[in-house]
Image (cartoon, rainbow over all chains, first blue to last red; front, side, top):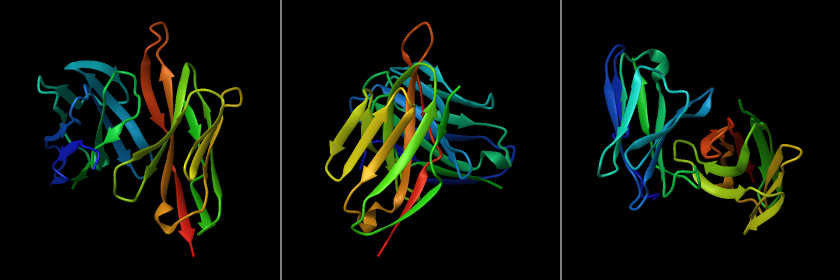
Amino acid sequence: DSGVTQTPKHLITATGQRVTLRCSPRSGDLSVYWYQQSLDQGLQFLIQYYNGEERAKGNILERFSAQQFPDLHSELNLSSLELGDSALYFCASSPGTGFEKLFFGSGTQLSVL
Amino acid sequence: GQNIDQPTEMTATEGAIVQINCTYQTSGFNGLFWYQQHAGEAPTFLSYNVLDGLEEKGRFSSFLSRSKGYSYLLLKELQMKDSASYLCAVRALAPYTGTASKLTFGTGTRLQVTL
């Protein structure tokens, strides 16, 4: 158990809908990272938050947004969903800002039908 | 940008040694990580190299050559539970600020250990 909690584990929705994925980092970790994993593309970095502030941005679509709350949990919002958004979404956390050793949650499997 | 290459699949026999290679091209290189990921599960950290040379940790070792843009993960005394995907990941610094800006993963090498 990495100590990172993600909910829900599975999400099935329809195209055009909006969903929210939630992540609670390990106790004491200030950074939260979101990654998308699809079968053909591997783990793709979306965004990083550190202590409530956006720190780094990857290939995150404009339809996607994230935030980190004062209690350090984070939410990833995916809107106007398309079939191609179906993937496993991982949250990871680390103590600092520098993409050091990451601890991953068990992921949310999103299926867009 | 960054480019990371690793073989898609490998097969090895229980008890044997296997070497998984990773080559990369990046600007602002600041470290290379190896993660293990069992099917349907989260990646877990295996090793980290930032300087050239070999880092050994039990049955697993990782090597880095920065001048060649090359790393390998060596798994000894293979066990069935080692069947998993092995992900090479490269950390890069942002230009001008010198702060770590991203960790980019390769697509992974799926290792199957057979009897």
